[in-house]
Image (cartoon, rainbow, N blue to C red; front, side, top):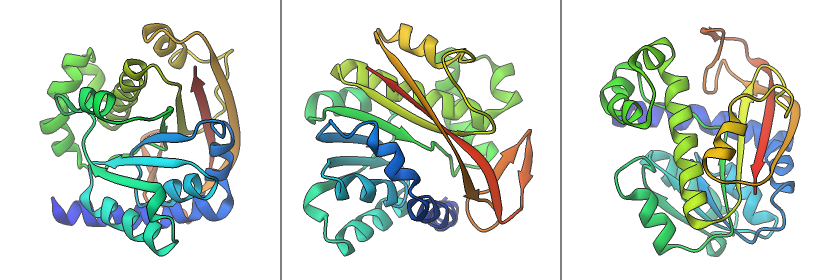
Length: 238
């Protein structure tokens, strides 16, 4: 497991540094600029956190990968913003994790940017499939695309922790095409489920490292190109 965690952290460090250098995280931050304290679900190696603290936010950043947490802590400390961010190694889907976050910490908004997974397929199936079935996914749905099912499950947990606290939630995902209110058949359902009155959409065409960073999938096929075109889709529940 440690080897997989380290490999993923090293790959994601390259991908997220690329996003940071391109200004993508700064674009994501503009939609939540008014909120002072942010709960960041899945901070990765810290470049997203860095974009938040540099624009004046205070951040509670969580990630279940201890290698990512260490790299994020080091990046924020090296950049001189250690007083503006706190890091917590935590899997939001663990029993009691959502209640702990909602009752023991203060934050004005929740974000979940560019959800990913370092687990191999068998580990995802062994660790998370029972939780995903309890959430409501069928074994057939999970087996058809277990990584996508896992991301859907974590996004649902992000909605739950934001709704329990009564604060806005911003989700950013990487897709092949733009999502808007006209073609969204997923986020609107989440909004209604968790009682949000308003959903805002925004999209940005961009690029991602795939060959040397975290490998991207397109129609189930791994993309080995150095740079792959993507669309960042942003949804804000309030």
